[in-house]
Amino acid sequence: MNFLLIFSSFLLSTILVNAVTKVTISGNDQMQFSIKEFEVKAGEKVELEFKNIGSLPKIAMGHNLVILKKGVSAIAFGGKALRAGANSTNALPESVKEDVIAYTQLLGPGEVELVKFTAPSKPGLHQFVCTFPGHYSMMRGIMVVK
Image 1 (cartoon, rainbow, N blue to C red):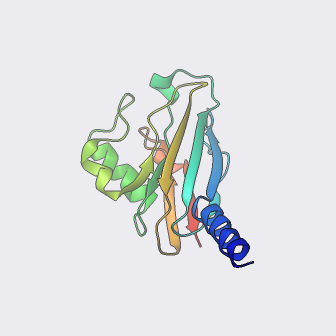
Image 2: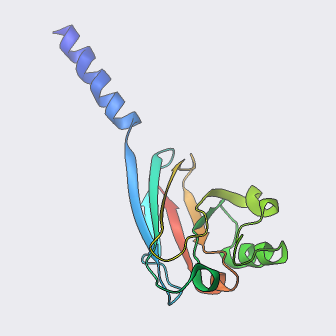
């Protein structure tokens, strides 16, 4: 009987430790994310699938998804990235990545990327944004850490 109790506890803890939240978000030619908010649990593993569902060329309408550290404004960060040299081929300059939790590459039409990361260990709000030049004014959302 003790063996079953110990084994059951082990299985439950393994399942909880290995829990993964899966999130799918897309960006379109109207400079909109498909969702503006999603929730994750503090310290949980996250698999975020990002898709560019638009049809315009990447050079004109590429999209990425950048999740920012707590307290970092998407609008301020987008401006910072632009001043650091963000452009239509590299929308996330290396010099601004210190404010970032996770990010995708810049995607063209039909492209998809899966990003895996661990949610912050403390509850809070984390903004996300597309840093393709000019998109940060419209393409924003919030990751809620519970």
